[in-house]
Length: 166
Image (tube, rainbow, N blue to C red):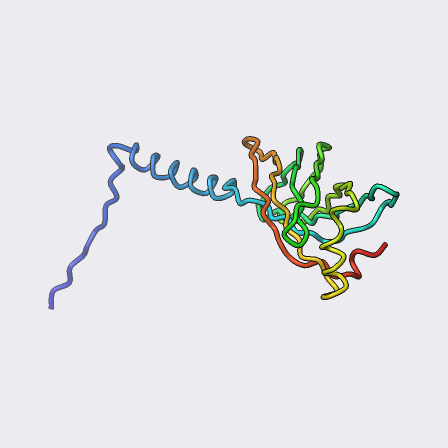
């Protein structure tokens, strides 16, 4: 029986450029995944009555903003129209800056003034169902590590009566 000896020789790359480009492409993909942007979500967490008078009143809306990204965001301008029981109720806006931690939540409070004429349908829903159907439609400006972006806010749901009481 004959024995063979096999010798492996590793030849240096004559052109290291393909290897370097491959490593750079891999690093770029990893960096892109780290900084890819997912839009934050906004939900109505609570509504508090902050004032009542003869012409109407004012509400404080607590909005829960969730950041699904691996990096912190900075929020800025926020505007939205509020609809109750499919009827326009008012508009909210906020221009003060706020921080949104990576993969975290922040509560942002916005104020809404209303007239008694807009309350009728909502009051009837509270008496009939014990809740009010609402819709928020607007946008929020967020600052990422790379740029500023406008994010659409489209949220709807029901607010139980307990959450409307102070």
